[in-house]
Length: 469
Image 1: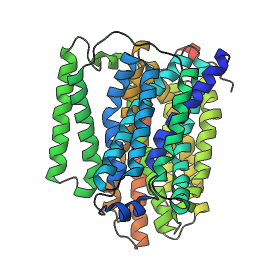
Image 2: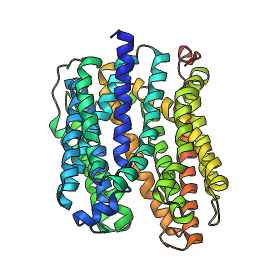
Image 3: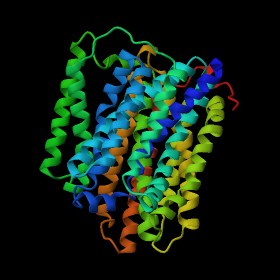
């Protein structure tokens, strides 16, 4: 296989990794009622089939990035798929609540190894050519919405026509094929000397996991709950200890001065706010379709297809050309602004509305904004770091997006509930709650655009050459 051809086959595996990591968050939705009945979940702990994955994923991303730098991205990428395979088998075979939740956490740990190492491999393969890097990031980014929508469809089909364990078993043959293909197409990416900061890894993992746990739990127990603030306090203490350890160690898990790299911090803030605006929109748009317009789960997934298709086309064809012409800073600002406009439009949804009038046009505007902002902010965040810290930079930016998503969803859940979204069956109240969530998400996206305009520095002139796809 020619070297150039092998690189694009490798990109296919990297995009598949992104597809699977996102799909595993959405594929379980339709299966949850049957899992509840067969495994004995209560209404209060059923959400942890989702949350166990998210907490482990978000908490271990920085460690996954550091391991990728120390032991080689290809090794960690393969290890992540092996862990995901084991977790998927265990989740499908689970015969009780505790085993199911533990297996979902193992899946999340596998995803935390896969995500940063995949981005590191992408930078190794395409980082020397800015034009090719933009194309590669576009394909990688487009895999995320495809995975989210595919998860909704596959979850419905598998649960209806096969059985719920297969929403987990589907990962097994894919993981086996990927593990078989990795030696043939992935660059070796040798390990480098260095020690693993185990104490730093422990404190940051505990801190991030506790923070994500508190955030995803807050809508259930309340933001004013003593439990919520105790966990958040513990998270803050652990993260403060992590920062102190990093400042004192000669070979830290995360070199704190990495944030002095031009644009790295600003690009991570953009990714955090992008996740905080986008995920609540996707979540509450699904609820509006099902609980107000009366769509069942499968048609509501189909209703998201136009938006998903536009994101994929925008990331693959439009974003590379726009970045090449206007530069990444301008596109991050423009994308977040367009996303804010689409979310503001969605805030006008009606209890007697329709998909064509109330959802389709506004969701397409929001999708266009997402497709313009995601690639340049991601590429800037990773490209700002030194090459030997590519895994760490990938772990940081993945953490930023995931924590932003959890924060945004938790905050908008509180906003929506305060505005009537907890009154099931009361269509006007539900619509008011969802509208409030869309408005809040629009404010977050607009804040991201303002921060990006102020904090991001323009790219060098060489980086603004036109890109042909």
